[in-house]
Structures are given as C-alpha cells and as structure tokens.
Length: 118
Length: 148
Image 1 (tube, chains in turn purple, brown):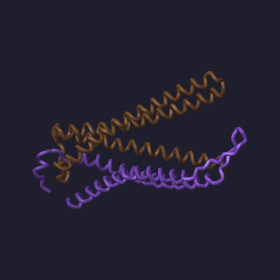
Image 2 (tube, each protein chain N blue to C red):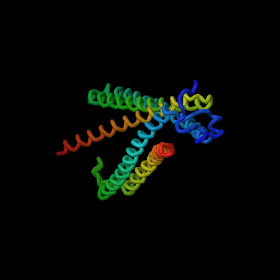
Image 3 (spheres, helix red, strand yellow):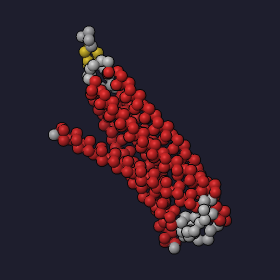
Image 4 (cartoon, rainbow over the protein chains, first blue to last red):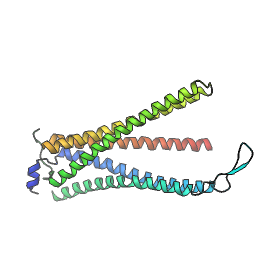
C-alpha cells in the first residue's frame, strides 16, 4: 500500500513497537470489556433481586411505636424504583464496555487484514 | 526524534485518524482531571469521616474501640480507592499528553510512548478488576461457609 499525501503530511507511522502497544492494549481492552459485560449482567440480576425483595417486604410491614400504637411502613414501589436504578446503572456501564469491545475487535481485524494483505 | 524503525505494512496516521486521536487525547485529559478530583474527594471524605467518628465516640465512652476500628477500616478503604483512581488517572493523563505532543510535533517517539501509557492503563485496570473479582469470590465463599 502506497502512503498517500495525508500520511506523508503527518509523518507518524505504525511501527512494530506501535503495533505491539496497540495489540496489547486491544487484548486487555477485550478482557475489560468482557468482564464489564458480565458485571452489567450481574447488576441487572441484582436489580431484579432487589426489586423482588423490596416488593415482598412491602406487604404487612407493621411496627410498634414507643406509645404502643401501630404504624404501617409501606415500601410499595420501592422495588420497582430499585430495579430501574440498577438497570440504569447497568446501561450506563454497558456502553463504555461496548466501545472498548469494538476498539479491541477493530484493532485485531486490522492486524488480520494487514497480515493477509502482506 | 528521528524515525528509525520501518512503518508496518505502510500504515500511517492520516488526517482522519489524527483528528480522532486528538479528540481521544482531549477527552482523556478531562477524564484524568475528573479522576484526580474524585480521588481527592474520596480521600477527603475518608479523613473527615474518620475524624468525625473518632471525635463523636471519644467523649461518650461507649463502644469507642469498635467505632475507631471501623472508622480506621473505612479510612484505609478510602485511601485504597483514592490511590486506585489517582493512578488510573495518571496513565490516562500520560496517554493524553504524549499523544497530543506526537500530533503537534509529529514525534514518533511520543506516539509510541502515548500508546504505551494507554496499554499500561488497560493492564492496570485489568489487574484491579481481577483483584476485585477475587475479593468478591472470597467474600461469597466466606458468607457461604458461615451459613453452612
């Protein structure tokens, strides 16, 4: 492949050292992305678990005050709120992981194509 | 610095990839500064919480020792989190600075050095994640063994 005018203009090349750094970064990025995806799944599961736990607590939670009168504490809706919050956090964490995964995959694809071309 | 190594398969940084790298470096700088601020805040929170807890329980004579131990543990956790955030931010800062220098001065050495910082940052976070997962597994095993 002949270097075009832009490439000559910048004069920065992908040397073997650069390639090694990028390859290593891509490998670790893939690891981080996969771990991140697993964590996202765990956060969603945690959200569902927390949601169902709060919902089950909401029925019949009566407490006695110091003056011996009963008070009913309702956590209705708290379960859904907790589940939504957890899912939002998981969604927020999912996108950086997706970008990392794409970065890693595209770098690997680039080396693969370059090796095939050579 | 002179470029004494051959270009790999004719790959170079063109105008588009230079713009992308520049943008990544700028956002990296923002992330690094935010990481330092967050690290500082976590440390400050730990110190303030430690001082408050120890002062609150000192005069009361009630459960002083356990409160102080708990506060000290919380402070240690805060220091750990803070140092993790600050170290991660240093790698991001180095990547941003060196990549910016490489693009401004077309210095190949700075580009390699910037990418090396990015790689080190990735390895650092991967190690932190591995340690975190291992600690979580140990905690789960501890809970499971205490229940059985």
